[in-house]
Length: 395
Image (cartoon, rainbow, N blue to C red):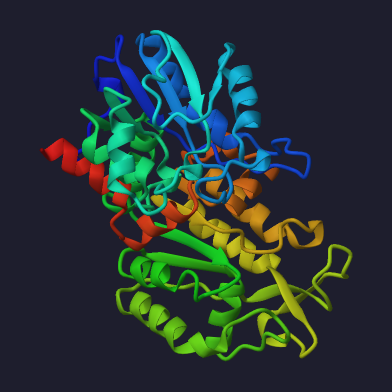
């Protein structure tokens, strides 16, 4: 993919505007509960600081109302954590869009308050984009997690800034996904799991034409089991999408591929952490059962398949891994991905949570911090933020 990269530019003394993804979860008191996205953004900021740039960083946080900055929408907690990680003060700047100058001195950094509080941000307003572009010499998009959105700080500013480029996190995400999907080492195995087929149907259809094996899990697997005529009891499924599931299975089968269907499952009478777990054959699920995980035989089969893969793309846990009794399947998947010699890339919040829980993060080749953008890239959709960077590189 033809895009400029920040690390290839001379940033000394330049006003560098970095759009990061610092949208982190917080508890009721406003304390950050997971700083993964902040830590992922630090290398790009440090690279610009080391080059002597005048660094401005911004991000969205939550879902604020445009034109209004409530205390709960402020990036103040992010500024404090970023200051700790960088080992230097990170002042938080309000009302920055129409300021005469917001860039700090060379080798220093400021955090610009929640960009989604600016009127016109979500609508990719051209006037807003031009005003922000005037604040910088170099625009850096280092927020792959927002690349699927055409907003003023992800798309519009890239059109009008003197120079527009990708930060190291954005560049690494694109390179990893391109390697996994456009130039994969075979066999290519994708794991797509989640509660609903409908939310990931286009991904399943897109991947069916490219992968050699498509592992489905969670409620998605239940729908595929139902499509195969297996009983699923009271398990989450979408009966109105059985034909779509059969179509995906048929497409894989036609080219010698496969959608492995569970041969055993772990069931419970209720969706609860303390519900009694029972392993049953896939054809023996009772009317009152809820399928909450794949069974040990299925887990072993899938683990063997993953260990023999050339490339693995993973999005979603295969069971309710948050409950110990129903975490075995996802644990087996995580360990198999880690043990495989395949190039592996994983993305999505639940997937990252599972990777961290089972302690395999250092053995997965690339972990994407993105959610929606990761999925849309898998679907083969054009991501507006990437398209803007490509257009500027080609100009």
